Length: 571
Image 1 (cartoon, rainbow, N blue to C red):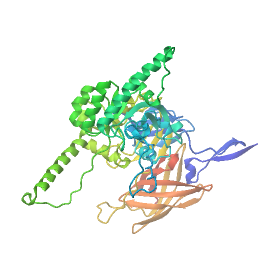
Image 2: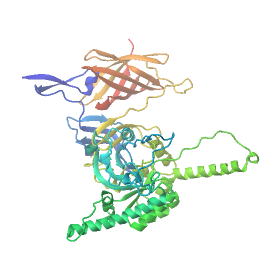
Image 3: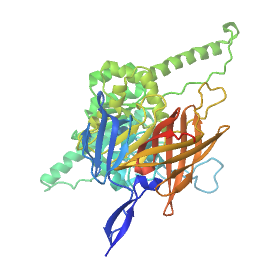
Image 4: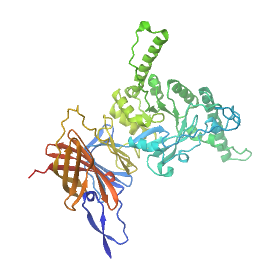
């Protein structure tokens, strides 16, 4: 026996249902699908290569087709990305995304004075490795938290992959390539042992605590690792008469570096750090990637000559607020004059820092970006500042996509919008680096995340914009997959307070509009529909021109659809 089931499609949100036949044992089809088609978009396949009014088919986590036209499967969710921009998902060259900060241990021991800490039970000149900050064997998968809020924060900015390293001091652990989507580390980590991460950060109140001590300890460990590796190889070949190797996991973590199969991503933010890292690399000959570089403009020629990959920091200095008070030079003390000179130098340094990416581009140095030391909330604005200060948009995009993909060895699966690559995409309502652009969709491994644009600001009394006249009845049509939904919209504008209803003549269902706002000729409002006990919200964004309007209706996970309407003449 068959019975009729009703499958929810977008038209149903406005009261229209599609009827299909199904077997008794079948369930109501879930609204979420792994097949998507994005159409009418500007597809930036890679820096400098754009398909206008293009389409992309995403299925089973992969990009299946890209072009002017694609085959639309029957089960696809179609997203009308009208005039939006689609980029390859951004790649964070190195950060601690998803790695929780370690908790500060509480003061222990009794009978101690306030603020005093318990005396260490270990030799501070030869502390345990975890105290010394020497744990290169630590794997990201063992410390990654899938629910860490930084993952969502980065994803909202368009980042879909991060090269994640553990937190710590000198040698925190091994880096991994991580998808910024998933409910467990096993699902998120797509490649382990991507990098050997190192910093010049010393331990607290234990050896190695200074930069020079860290450098010395790094050399010592590297040499010991070379000896241990040779011993293990000899023992494996012929163990007769040989002492059994120690099999030290800390030293074994160096082996891929010694074999030049794994690069050392060395954090070198300032000029001194860069010099010191180069000194270590010249001595030991390990493959190097300079990471989180903040002050590299003075050494650009040296970096280019060394031909080492570079990750520039996304962190930029904050401009110091001025108090507005001016002092006459004659009234200033020598100290105040010195402070004025220092402030001037600081401003010059800050300008050079902001122009660093542009300077590297002019030198012909390829680079990616590192989010290791930047606040997530500052990333997009800092990228815009770089573009405004000499960095071209194409090179900025390359630093977010193609360059880190090549640097991390994942160019075959990520970095460009091409058939066969991971369905990692960023969809924005304007070019990404444009002022007030908004990320509207992000796809990670084919999973779609949708983000609302900030609400329009209401028109002020001083605004020169002339508000559209919206009071009255309107007929509307909304394009939906395979059909079009029509209905009526009735609005009333009472001194800036907008109310109204939206209805569908096919069912007679009428719902109230809410959160209505008119700014000039832009009208936004939302409608909540009760579908079988489930509330579904539809957000309208319309441009009113006289007696007609056009715009979009955003229906969450179902997509965004074109809406047109015209005023109904009064009888």
